[in-house]
Length: 308
Image (tube, rainbow, N blue to C red; front, top):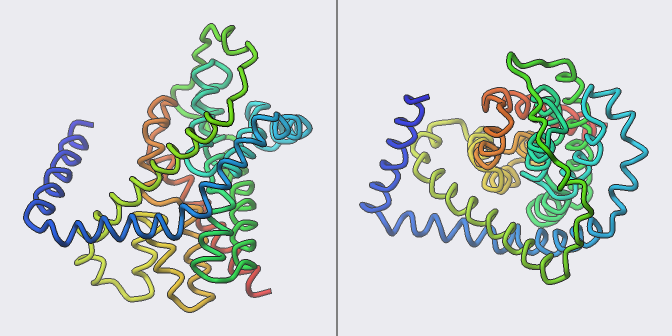
């Protein structure tokens, strides 16, 4: 663990030094990241996030998921709330699913094993990024956006089956006194919904901006790769940048690469989830493997659907 901390500190210091000695280049990188966020992510994500939160506050999603509690519990060998967390992750995008799983764990509702199983299918991207940003804006093909979204959902559901019996060496339930959690929560006002949505979207923009800089720092090494794999390499680092470059590839290849990138989520998404995973006592490498298998399943599904 100390070696990882030393390496992380060294990498951050190196990044700072590079920025200090070549500020113009990395200011451009940051501006490119902010521009991509403002023109390709923000227009689709913010309105949908606000509308989604309005629907959630009405309680309709929770009532719908009530009928799916037992099937999800049977299929995935986990808590009956898994269906609700899954649909919330699909509606809201990264990293809402991991955050809600952590909340259940901290409230003593699920064990570490159950949390680990839920992470295999409850960490997902949202429809407006996939259909709106990737499909409509990047590929200029809404139909492809729906194909990618269906592949993404199915890959999560299939992926969860592979991990339904996984057990960690130390699994426990916190058994907190959660009587305060059972009290009925006051619904958010419209102003609160706007404020929360803007804050969440700006957090996404900050991550995109930072990782655009990191990708440009790594660009000399990435440039050594074959042209067809550059988008994949960038997507492994940062989701949005990878999807942008994948959209410039031949249609079929670009769609399959994009499908993998979306479901894997990229290192940026893994880092966003790392704080949550620490609370769950789940090793980051295990979560990375879960996202890797989901990405591979999604890519295969997209390839099959497009071929058909």
